[in-house]
Image 1 (cartoon, rainbow, N blue to C red):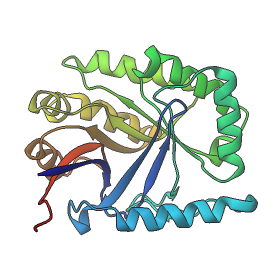
Image 2 (cartoon, one colour):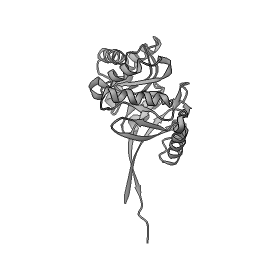
Image 3 (cartoon, rainbow, N blue to C red):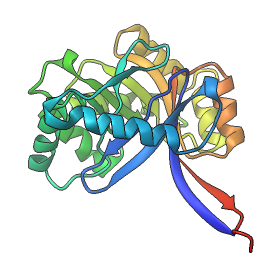
Image 4 (cartoon, one colour):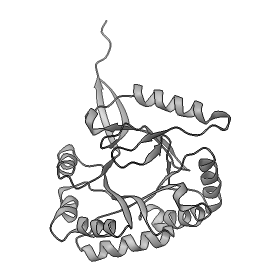
Length: 240
């Protein structure tokens, strides 16, 4: 048997191929709308990626797609911030990304021990806030007050008054999902911030087993799902 490994991203109601432009590691991922089901495969992603790369050649703008029911126009290429070599390197990448309309920047509280958020906050201050889509992720906590403090720290790092997209980071087990959904839990904190205009849309990121992911989706609590999932596909060897 031969095995193929790939990663995929899933967002409700959107069909949106995404390429994370991590500075030290470029990773292609595929995004599938929930209306299409959790369908894996490369043809749609490869076609969209080729179209995006062709569109950005010669100074053209990166194409966008409606991001589900959020109303956001999301570029089909995305700039991720899991790691980068230096703040100077990040400046150059952000400038190049913005030049081509790649204006979705995604980071997390834990990336590079908080340095990723701080570096993005510093470099993005050079651009009008409405000109880019900013996303960060914070892990849910047993104590919702600690979670609230972490979001406040993330927003201070990012030097922003609001987040376009916020995700509960690493909802990988039923325990983390319970921290989010239980009465008085972290979801209520995020919803309070949403009412105050500090968060526009609430989602979660996960590497969880399928039952945990489906339980989170079926709760109806989230605007989107950020799923990076490694799948193993068995392929029968050729006969003869």
